[in-house]
Image (tube, rainbow, N blue to C red; front, side, top):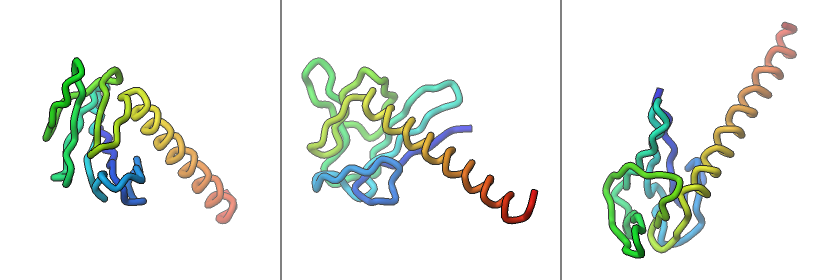
Length: 110
């Protein structure tokens, strides 16, 4: 099952970035079953970039790694830091679902 995470200024995004150069729905990260990461720009206003050897390269979609430096508009972040945010987002979601299940079981007396 492929996991998809949205990146943007909107609070509904799994990875919310409060920078005016970041679009509300700026980009998406896809994590394949094999663990590969793919970054896709969602027609953002200021673009999505990968910095390689000091050069900023605009992408519409690209495979990325945790060692890449990424830019969303003028906001930059290391791939490892972005991956940590994704992992924290997943942990929060899983913990929230576990709590909801536990609470609902208590309500129905299971």
